[in-house]
Length: 248
Length: 232
Image (cartoon, rainbow over all chains, first blue to last red; front, side, top):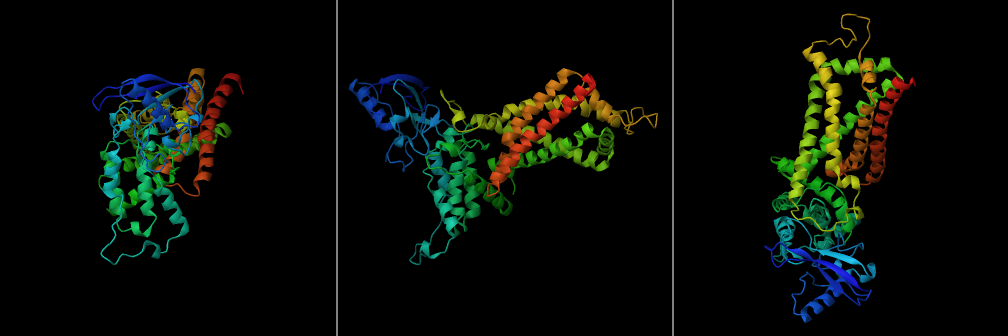
């Protein structure tokens, strides 16, 4: 496959940045999208040019490191996959592909396609945890009976890898699917009840302070989420927040 | 509880409550207006009751006006905040791949409804307030000096729908209302935290409401226009 790539290049956080055209040739349909970018970077390095900076780590769809807004969609046109799992067979020979960083005021560009997603870390630090006594009397989590449906739903919420595709896809740059998943995974379990009130209040406050937008329920986040995190998690977070506000 | 309106979720919740209230109001507005098609006398009686009963005038009407102003003001505030949450737009964005046109354009459908509502207030509400509270005529009669001149409400309604431009404008307003409700109905329930086993059924009901009610209003406008102009 021969492709034209329009890639966002930005030297640093202060640079204005622009789309730059590149040509890549003889791309195998079996390559992953990131492997295709590796090929491009090899070409650029051989020419003495600056390679395109992009995030990646496990390349197995579980670390949440890769991002990229490809042809107008977070993680590209495929469903239920991260960019590292996206294959070039999803494109046609001769295609022009737009590759941009995830856009949000709370995800500032560091360089080229790499954005700073530490705002998600700060939201997690605000309450996305449980406190467990580890002094030697720790109770095995499996010793506490939990309704199967609740356990499954909590686990589904916990599969969120925090990649930020929800923010990137949302027309409002809202982080509510991410925060909803992180609130839900504890709200459904007995271990999460002790800190439930503080958790949701603090995480939502941090989310607002980071400058994410307001959810208008377009559902784009759910569609583009590589892990299929459901909008039900946002509704659950809304319930938890309203309950906590009445209590607190 | 303090400061709930300062949070994104609190504002969403308040927006949803005002939306649910307005959707209930639209339903009762339609229920009264459709009477004008089937029974002008009943329409007159109900209109007179709504226009003169103290609880409606001095309790529900202010709540409605506050609800309308709040819904529009909060809608614009949230939209401006949302715009500032993405300072640089994508060069290529395929919104249609993951969301409906209605959900992405609530501000525009809402903006058009606001324009329509201003015209609607100038057409009906302001003259009504003027007659009752400035001219002081609470009789509701065509001629307040003639006791058997009959109620004026039906005649006023029909008279408004004679010009075709107004009928066209109202039809357009109701189309935008339908587009707004097609997303807004279920969005309101999601915002108050209601996403459960009833959501699928509620979505079906929401679609029927979002299309059925505006279509009913369009029918009323066209009915009176055709009746006045073509003797239907």
